[in-house]
Image (cartoon, rainbow, N blue to C red; front, side):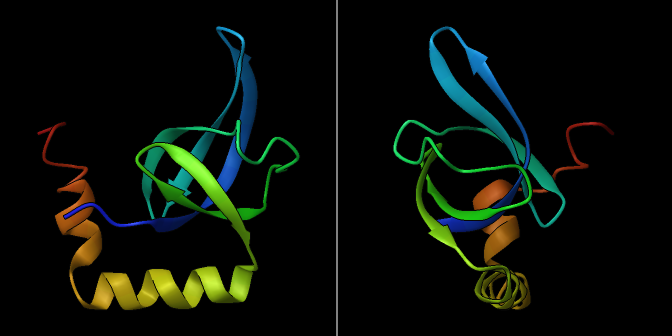
Length: 87
């Protein structure tokens, strides 16, 4: 399954000519391209799909969506077990 998942921006940097962010998806951290939302700031939430931030989202909506995804097991399905790789 390939979901659009809300995440919180924790870091922003320019990489290879692209505006990139480190985004936290309820404990799973991924690199995300910000070319569609160039004014997104650290601490804000966005809906991310296939590595691209597509739409800004308020914190309450993001947290509710993440909680629902987690309850349904969709985050693990989407990202796998983030600790499995380190074992």
